[in-house]
Amino acid sequence: MTIADLKPEHVEQLVALFQRLPDSDLTFIKEDVSPAAVTRWIDAPGWRWVDLAEDGSVIGYAALRAQTGWSDHVGDLRLVVDPAARGRGVGRALTLHALGHALRSGLLKVVVELPAEQTRTIDMFLGLGFTGEALLRDHFRDRTGQLRDLVMLAHFAEQTYEAMDLVGVADALEEGL
Ligand SMILES: CC(C)(COP(=O)(O)OP(=O)(O)OC[C@H]1O[C@@H](n2cnc3c(N)ncnc32)[C@H](O)[C@@H]1OP(=O)(O)O)[C@@H](O)C(=O)NCCC(=O)NCCS
Image (cartoon, rainbow, N blue to C red; front, side, top):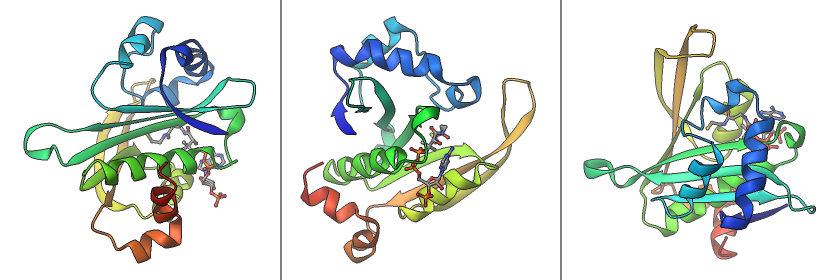
């Protein structure tokens, strides 16, 4: 696995990843994932990374974007991993990469939103130092129109490096990831 900044040469494989995803996973990307739109992301505000398999295919994607105005110290994190590559640490590695970048960029807080019933995913973020921020009831509609609860988790930069050492963030920073 290699994490790289999103570049024009990754667009085709990234679009192929999105095409392999079920609709339920695409809900949380929140953006247009057509080839034309993905090409525009290269120069768009924010940071985007891909995780590359040895054959050059894209098996993971993460995006971090600072909010605006009074909340420009807060970054929104989104990520998705190829269903066939889950459970191998790709999601955790992308999250650490994005957190390291957020801290070096001066963001004070990173938030992520996900369906409340995705308990395994919530556990992954809690294990990386995120904490529960909000439960938003009936906050989004899934593809069948069903109202569902959303959880917001947050990671605060002020957390001690001692705590971050435990989950590998400090190592990621030192390696300049
Ligand atoms: C959430 C997601 C990115 C995790 O990616 P991943 O590469 O499977 O995660 P990792 O392999 O790093 O797993 C980390 C932990 O997450 C847990 N996990 C969460 N979802 C999992 C899944 N579908 N399959 C396997 N493990 C999963 C595992 O228990 C693992 O913990 P462990 O190593 O202690 O067993 C991936 O399931 C995904 O793309 N989901 C859909 C999109 C989404 O919900 N994004 C998050 C909000 S934007």
